[in-house]
Image 1 (cartoon, helix red, strand yellow):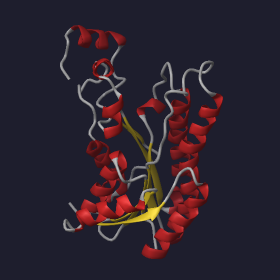
Image 2 (cartoon, rainbow, N blue to C red; image 1 turned 90 degrees about the vertical axis):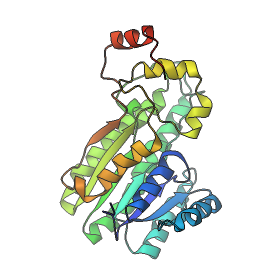
Image 3 (cartoon, one colour; image 1 turned 180 degrees about the horizontal axis):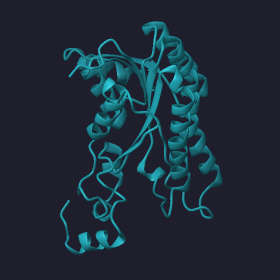
Image 4 (cartoon, rainbow, N blue to C red; image 1 turned 60 degrees about the vertical axis):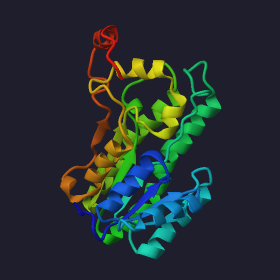
Length: 267
């Protein structure tokens, strides 16, 4: 299904994990994908690797820590492609060693996480939307997190930043709908990226999955499928939607998780 032919997409942080899965999915569906990345050489290798499959992708420099790289990333994409039909704000960070509860966590880490996670969405959308207005519309997809819906006993900065992304998604959707611009958010649950698999012990995974009715981690492609839906015409009458892709996480009562653990449900 190549329902994104003649569309130009810009995806931030797209060399691995969810970002890479999104880039490949949109390219598979016919879009020309610009990968906003810090590691331009690595992105070039990815683009060359998939060129034989007919995927059209190219890197543009983006470093979320360098705010002066945001405008050149957008400008270079416009210079090369002339338009941006799809924006996927995928960049996000967490600092679990510092971002704890309200009293015990680092205040500096809290505000830094907000500035990076919410700030990147705000600043990049602010740059892209005027171009979408001129061309008559576009689709923005923000990668949030199920942690923006369900509070935790730790990682307060991360949760608040993702809740803020959910809200700014609705704000953008409302404010620019009359310009033909749609804005939706995809909220991954626990996802089997390389980073997650290297840093999470099996005991944690078993505990977490006892709260997930589908009893598995998401694959990056599960998230990319949702992004591709929002990017294309199949969702043309949907805007301001907050879609969790989390296997049913949060549906059950605490007793549900207790029952699953007692039954020793395998991973």
